[in-house]
Image 1 (cartoon, rainbow, N blue to C red):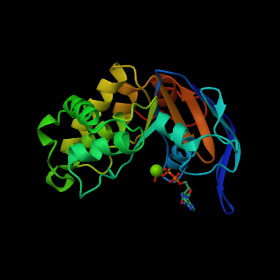
Image 2 (image 1 turned 180 degrees about the vertical axis):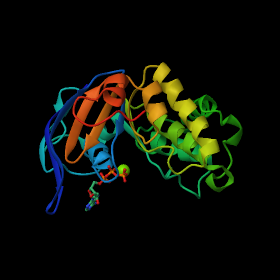
Image 3 (image 1 turned 45 degrees about the vertical axis):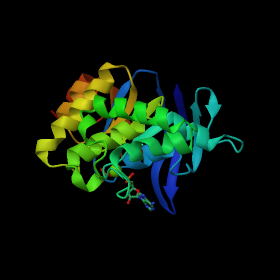
Image 4 (image 1 turned 180 degrees about the horizontal axis):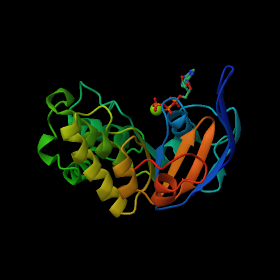
Amino acid sequence: MITIKGLSKSYGNLRVLENVSTEINKGEVISIIGPSGCGKSTFLRCINLLERPTGGEITIDGQNILSRNADVSKLRQKMGMVFQSFNLFSHLMIIENIMLAPVSLLKVPRKQAYEEGMKYLEMVGLGAKAIAFPDELSGGQKQRAAIARTLAMQPEIVLFDEPTSALDPTMVSEVQAVIRKLAADGLTMMIVTHEMKFARDVSSRVFYMDEKGIYEDGSPAQSLIYPKNRGPGLL
Ligand SMILES: Nc1ncnc2c1ncn2[C@@H]1O[C@H](COP(=O)(O)OP(=O)(O)OP(=O)(O)O)[C@@H](O)[C@H]1O
Ligand SMILES: [Mg+2]
């Protein structure tokens, strides 16, 4: 589904990613762990072109997304992104936040966008909050609304960048439960997380990143418990 070859990214003289290659297959749930500042967010942001890689190739469904004639907005629609900080529009009701992109980008009729949006809100347990404003929601509810908004664009893959690290501990599990459900439904996901137990339980594969690249790529047991390329396991 996604093939990454020799991916590099520098900010000025700072080389964050160097010659990273991997493949992501449909239906995989990949957790990305690793120390702060090693380039996990940069890696996700290169995949959905929020950052322009300095070198290498990224192919999605056979299309090189870094080529000059790639249709970037179409490619972005295939990839949903969920951020640590929710990024909901505070002046719009929750259901309006969810309808916005389907109506404006996909030209879905408002009524249909509403009905589909409600379906996603119910899926994340927020059917009753459709006409609330983001400020009226808890952090965990906001993040679940942000996930519903991402799903409403029917992405082929969803990239999560530390979706629970801005939340109080009591709210972490409700957001993780939604992600687990999506994993059980077969959605392809990449999840940057510091939650080792969650990574172990939800993922089919775990990447351990450190300076400039991926040092472990294997099952949760391989990457977390008996890593080949670094010190003792993390669990
Ligand atoms: N826009 C930018 N301009 C310059 N340097 C940047 C930029 N974004 C990130 N960096 C630097 O690149 C390196 C990797 O950052 P990145 O945010 O990808 O790390 P991370 O693994 O996601 O860390 P964390 O776990 O703290 O979120 C860091 O040294 C960071 O300071
Ligand atoms: Mg980060």
